[in-house]
Length: 245
Image (tube, rainbow, N blue to C red; front, side, top):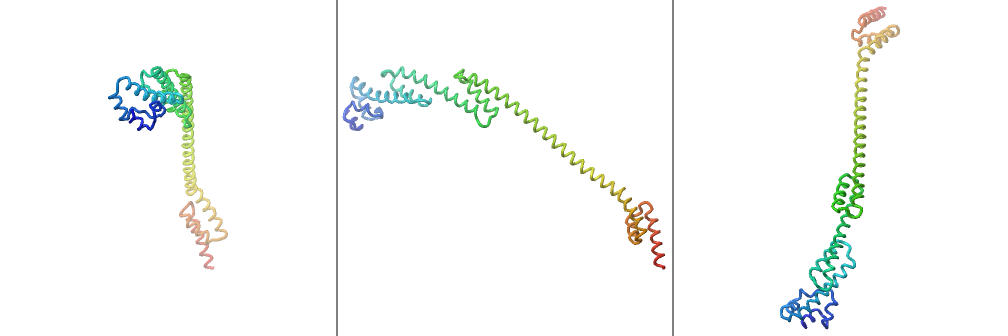
């Protein structure tokens, strides 16, 4: 024992339990367990058990998360039968189960309130709430998520209808634009074939009274339209007559 006290830097055996570090991994402890009589070995073993027991009590005072209760259960396994460790083992299991359910519940709530409210998020939340088997208000939350999914479906339907309407408007606008281009082309063609030659013909006839040379050029450009050839011959005769004077 002396060697163990020296390695632990304590003066007496009563000081062993005042430290937080367990002693069961010490070679000196192992030698005591091997060579000491049964009663003394049990006494030294209980020093280690007391250290673990105090650690267990401290863990249980502040434990909130399931992993903390899991740590407590691991400690309990090492000190079965010591003091009230067996009843604390049951307490650890109950609290660990509650902590796991609370953590799963909180995780499901996070899925419900994600910024990106999608059907997938609500479906995952429902799956988590169902696994809780009625814990807290999980059944009510399942109903709430179901309503949210229905709202999402309705919104998606409205969005799809809106997009379809916009696509129809776009197609109609393109058809109107194409129709306008075709109309302009047709009108331009009709003007070039039927209206412009008539306008130019009438203008050329008026020019015969004021400017024979301009009238001559105009009739030539008409390229045989109506009586343009005949009119051009008349203008040519007039010019010839004027030149002979």
